[in-house]
Amino acid sequence: MTKKLQPRKPGLPAKIFRGYLKVVHDKLYYRHIYVEGREKMPADGTPTVAVSQHQNCLNDPLLLGFALSDRKPRFLARANVFKNPIFNWAIRGLGALPAYRMKYDGYAAVGKNQQTFQEVGYALRRGETVILYPEAGHQDKRWLGNFSPAYLKMAFGAAEESGFEREVFVMPTAHHYSVYQHARESGLVMFGDPISLKPYYELYKEQPRTAIREVNALVRKQIEQMMLNITDLEHYEQVDFLRDGVYGEQYAVAQGLNPKHLPSKLKADKELVKKLDDATVAEPEKMEDIYDKVRKLAKGIKKLNVREWLFEKKNTGLAGLIGRALVLLLGLPLFVVSIIPTFAMFLVPELFLKKFIKDQMFRSSVRAGVLLLIVFPLFCIVPVVVMLCCGNWLSALCYLVAYPLMAIYAYNYIIYFVKYKGYVRFTKPSNRDKVEKLRAMREEVYLALDKVLEASEENAAKAAAIRQERAAAEAVAEVSEAKAE
Image (cartoon, rainbow, N blue to C red; front, side, top):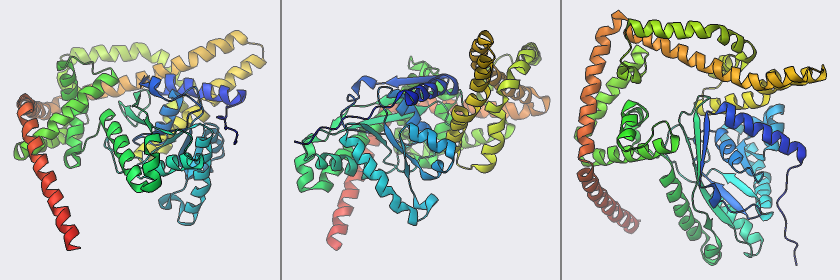
């Protein structure tokens, strides 16, 4: 009888390194991390493929991987990330495996993926967890792309290698972020209901494609239900502007939900997006007119270089500007003290990221990686070690505690200063006419949207009937095409 393989466990140095990364990632890079449904995850030792939508490059597996603190999951990352010696050592230590793609690595390199797939199969046979992203590449929008069936081929392949004696699970998960690109935002990872492949083993033996198709549909459905999926890509920018702006916050409050609490805001956003989608299907001409006005409103606000929430502020006059200027002035000495040791966290990376990395999602991953692997160790840990070597343990302890606090304060001060500049532009006399024009346009749009939402039940019923008619027509067309072939 073949001996049952056990999950590999990281050694003490790896545990310390992973613990350090988790603390800095969860407490410093992010403002808050939310985890929902973690208790549904199969225990370590159970072959599990954790599957999610992919919307923030390396940040996605980091967010999910650190939520699985009881194990060392394997995940795939772009092969070009491994070229840097520091990143190569670090992400391999976290369980990353290189994924070669023709777009980035060339046709000849794609064959190297076979070794990666073998390692994935080996991990599953040992009862480990593997994180895979069926969309292959990360998206640049909050929507769900097409799934490649490769993740299920690996999962069923692991079951097949055990003679279909071992139960393999697929765990649907989803990520969500308050803002993709920035640090000090909130992240959310959700766990769905695990799907056992065991009931599909017999079907897979006879009809593997059918088994994969059926399981994939279940996985995709769960992920779609957990995430924010804006399917109306034609009006994506307008929908995202509404749900992410003041209107989305006010909608959440009206539903009794807290817009500052990311899971609650996600729930409100999903409801709002659904109602807007139903209205677009039921009343396309009316919604096209509204979206056209939203587009002009968003363009005008962007051109003025202000934020929409300024229209809700009452103290945007001279007194408000003076008060905020005093806050900045009083906080300036502490900011100077804080920014000197922590400037590399914000200023240095930004000088290079925008210039050399065009992909916004990959840019956020590099920012997180630079913080975790270079900036924090170099400017916090190294000085602490030097102080300890010199016998200044009290100074070392104080610096270790103060450094993250200084970094957070410096970051918040910069954000406050940027907001203050927005206040100045908003109240500038030469912009007064533009502001009032945008204010009137905004009120008109919001009133129109309120009327649309008031008719949400009628729109939902009408939209359902239209979708059903379209589905029937598509089915007839598919049959006709099949006969013609």
